[in-house]
Image 1 (cartoon, one colour):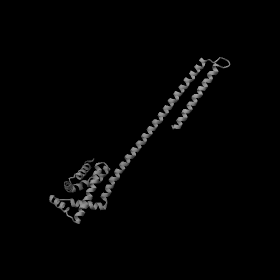
Image 2 (spheres, rainbow, N blue to C red):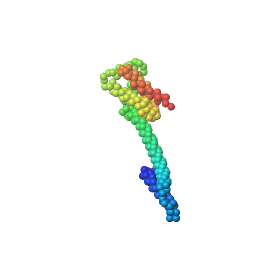
Image 3 (cartoon, helix red, strand yellow):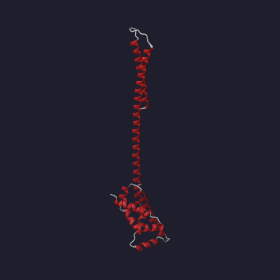
Image 4 (tube, rainbow, N blue to C red):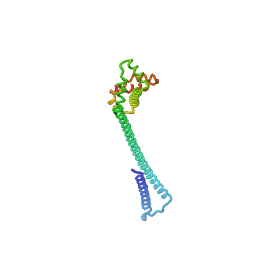
Length: 228
């Protein structure tokens, strides 16, 4: 019921009560002071009639107020229910949007990984970081320090690979990507790259006194492996 409907109903009730009061008063006067029963109107009769009329008006006014409050309460309740429905729908839509964003980010990581240019960087980095023993590890670490074009290209390849997995790990650990998609696409790939790059990462962390990379990446790998 709209506000205009409520106002119209209350107005109709007020007019109806006024009409009843007028009819009641006229009938009372006719019955007591008709031609067949002539009687002089005294103050007592007037006061009695006034009391009756006032009581009737008060009763009708109270009823109108009760009806009005009831209708207002219904409107308030309906508005509250509508507002709750609207909020629930907005919350559901927002949750859907958030989940959709997570899925798109996960798919974007896979697109980047399968991009031919990135795959070339990843492949070269992985092949270089694969070592047989400690001596091999030491030699490759020292070779990367050399200022040459080949060493620079290797450092670039390794940085691209590490930045990719670190970025994915940080978003994965903070639940900013769809974990189920990452699990399907990188459950084997990520630990494999990590195992071959672990020695290099540890040396980087020792050099720069920062364990963020290995901590984030290892946490994601453990979660990927242990996910049901």
